[in-house]
Image 1 (cartoon, helix red, strand yellow):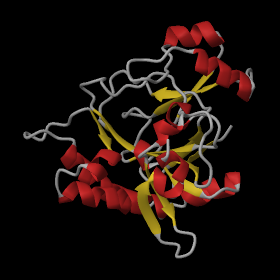
Image 2 (cartoon, rainbow, N blue to C red; image 1 turned 45 degrees about the vertical axis):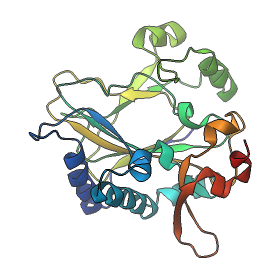
Image 3 (cartoon, helix red, strand yellow; image 1 turned 90 degrees about the vertical axis):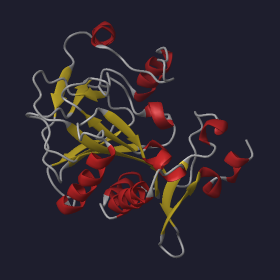
Image 4 (cartoon, one colour; image 1 turned 180 degrees about the horizontal axis):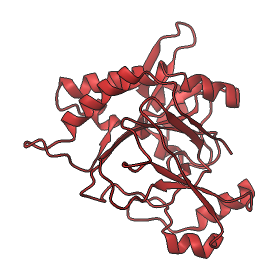
Length: 262
């Protein structure tokens, strides 16, 4: 299992510029903050205007200049692949709980077979007056294979993913699971793999809306064997060209021809 939290390391000015772009996308005509989930892949496929196209470019630039790609490469000794299909921005209003996500694993996105990391990057200070993330420490009570079997035995929700409410967490793991929330300022971030249970931090009386960017990174050279190829078809990705070193944006078929044939 991989989990690391960093108090700093990212370009604060770059993140603040992204936040300014996001605040335009996530406000109604009166400028009232809404609870929304912005899909980077939708903005690339069907941009509503030049601002969305520019935002996608800025997101990709932020990732490849952050050093998170090198963290993946060092951790797993594999070439990193940015899963733009699963790159999202979440804006959680203090007035709404629409974007609250219960306990879950990010194996929901890319399975268990290929090492995958999530980089969760708050664009506002979180953990005190603004909800961050909360993590569950299972204390090594399950092996990776046991966790995988347990997770895949859980029913799918309306979105086709698996999640656990508190009562189900209690039923599965008892009441001695240690829960940890993190405090981060802008420029800090956390990285964790697809076997780490986490959820939106529950914070009664939160005063500020939460804005966070989520990157998901996998192996450039290997597809997960536990996801049907047809589910990977047309997936938006970004990678570095091996010969030129230039950053590319494209679909899964460009790297994995077998997906196009599924």
